Length: 225
Image (tube, rainbow, N blue to C red; front, side, top):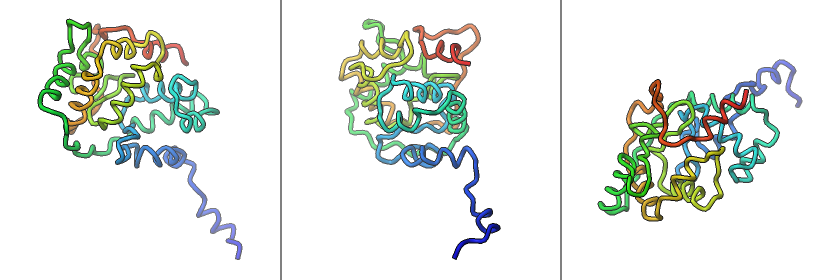
């Protein structure tokens, strides 16, 4: 039997941003907290401007993943900002890190690169851009701590071979070219083995401070209304 108009009205799907981004959570997990397979990253709590930049990059072909491009192809900048802000406002708890299979020496090399960089090879410390606790730097630099090792390897590797790109000047591409395969593995292993702090909000770049390299992602925000 056909439902009555009153029943049909009460069963209507609510037009909320949470409902409209339900397709995103199929891969990225409830509230964007990440899937358990280590392939799809956590997007919950990332800086809104960073998430917006990545959505634009997928839509416009700077990042290559056909499913993402197909989902975003016809969406406006304003809608992408709304999606980015929704996930930036989500702060579900992080899971405990998975046990690391890296050696003590590899983990120590990763820690050194994250906290001190490698001056001899022109590699700045990761914390110089991603924040002292690696939880990100508002408005547009993501946190890396708490991401799965395989995902980190995949994304750093994509920059290394030129598959992943950001707005010019692409500071990550410049840095990654100076990292050896062993260094990339060390950084990914160390980051994925760390417990995320309870307060994992992105830090804010102090007034008058600057990043070690000029990054086009910052300019991309200024260029878009």
